[in-house]
Length: 463
Image (tube, rainbow, N blue to C red; front, side, top):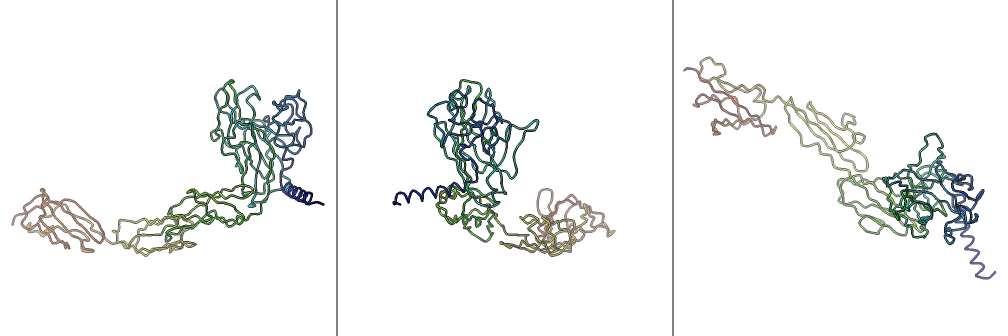
């Protein structure tokens, strides 16, 4: 065998291996049961091998082998499909008299073998917009044509069936596919969420999430119609298990190195334009970072959820009055917290003296302790006292519980002048030589950081 023949054999063998990896049966729509002829005469499953439509909308099958007199022969003779003679066609957006509708069309097929949950796959298909003279309506172009997957058959012919499906697209045309007569490749790498058995093609986003552009304005109806060809879902050998979904950013870290390294990747793209496999993050708060990882077959977008772990500060040891309380609320969910009493409450409403401690174990362990003490604060404060009354009743300005802690007292007249003050009041102000009248006081405890304001009337009796 000559060198050229040997090389050709290797290329052929390599192509056969790649083709064998495709989990999609009849991926180029070449295998058919019968050729299409009249519009909507048959359902897709009546025409195509393996493929069917999950909803009773009017998904189409096209094949250039059909008679030229048949409606479903290609409208322009030189408009051939990407490979072979067959292709599918479906509507991704529909407008009537300027009003958007959720009507869309879909294809579905059972995979050759189920996908495996958490395994890495490449999804790919080719699409081309129709010509403006295809139907008697105007041409729209749209985005969002994509591939979705299901672990059981999606088949809804019930009464009152929907005319659209809202599902997660794993491969999707994010930008509008233009009406330029060219076949456009749509591809993506992804992790399988389940052991998927079925593949679906269509627009699985709502009409409000679909971007459309109108290309002509001759009819009241306008549709975005796309041909689809050469669909593939291929298992990949890359190991992306090291890509974490959540990354802890500890409070004592100045920056965080986010690692997106995957053996076999050929490039990385981060939001700031950097292209290394490691991204240095300095945003000390909860947020997300998206990285695009390029492989030879396709690209994969991975989102790192950065979980900032703040320190816990319950505050300084605290002295409070008995009628007061304090709320201890660490910035963590209850499931993360362990209090000294064994509970995992999200917060503690403290009303009794004691020492309280909380901790968050794990990758970024944090903890704190606070001592809280409650005392009797000034109780009854009279609003009148009567020195020089010779009856020993209210001879001084006496405040209940004033001797428990240091309280300063300032007394003011009605003009705001300080007429009495004591740094440590001991219930010993008898009015001095001040005349009768109303006076204003300010009690202050630096230890409690508490101020009490009020007024008191000084009444003198006869000597």
